[in-house]
Image (tube, rainbow, N blue to C red; front, top):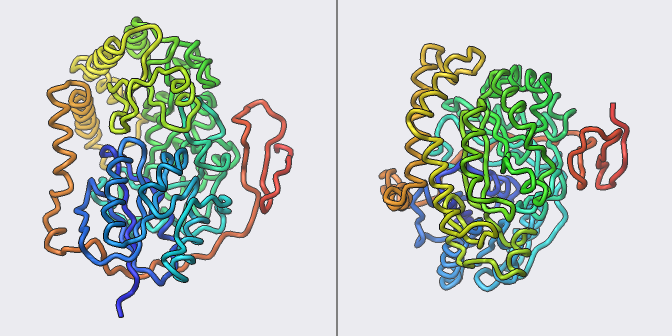
Length: 506
């Protein structure tokens, strides 16, 4: 008799850094199952092969495709479970297309689903809401089941924490995770040491890696010994601390991506961003001086934004050391405070989830400009920031900084920076120039077909050796706060086996 087959499918909405959500579920799946993890943008999905249980992860921009796929599997009699932030916000909608919906963090619910399935597949039904797991007890994500090599050698995913202490109005992190918690350092090191030999750099997929300064300091000290470059996401206030930046750089940090969102202070205030736009220049400068690439994320269409916001943003960017920026309209994902506000005010231009991809897609009627002004403004900003002359200036500035990490031989630093710069220019032109946007969408459809051997094999399942045994770390305090990051507080919250208590800061 063949073993039970579980297929975990993710539907990314663009060629992005891989996530670890399905690899984390695979890690806690009983050994009774053979498991396949399928990223439909990077691998052919073999729909017709025998499969006993399907799990699907999708965000709002791809949820319609996820529902269609779930309907097809259920029509064949295969039980389907859907998870992710969209169905966490709208679980009843998800249940119209799936047998079961997982809300929030998935491991605890997934173990229960597997147990139910092994008793009787018919038991897998309804909405699963369970306690978030103790991170110290979780095995490392099963990245060996992912086609990690197809994401590239410089973005191998690692995780050291979950959640974000903040509560920005446009963000869904608070609904997906139980506050902010950290993994034991030993857990992170185990992930790193299990990486394939072809990996050249890591990318921490955490929402806010160094939100707990004590944990970050200990983590950086451990990473320094591993001698592998990495990128991370961090709130801007982390970069105010020159000592923290030095520790990050010495640990191998090559890039810090921060959500600055806006140069318009009223926009930050209304979104609960808890940031001072006046600090941004200094913060970006400190990152660059520390020898780390500063990357910024910017959002437009807030109620306080006006048509001149785009020119003001470009002028600001020209005055800073920011080497990379991403630009998007506000995306009011279902379940966020922004989505509830706009829906109540009748300002959603569409509830077609396919349009909730950001960039130059406008889904909310702005207050102080027209939808067309917002769309054309963000296109103008992106194309100007990534114009060849401005890109050349940033390249010269980066090359002149001797502290920037090299992700290979030092002699290749110049060509590597030039190649990355050219790629960014091309990337943002095809994202914001309508004739090229159609070409990009076409490339997404055909990208997975570039691996011809997949068709020869004819299956998503692979015979892999069993992963090394994992021994959970000893239980210990885990940083936890639902109140947000407060640099000046005299104490922090910790969790001891689920009980929240105050502990003095050292």
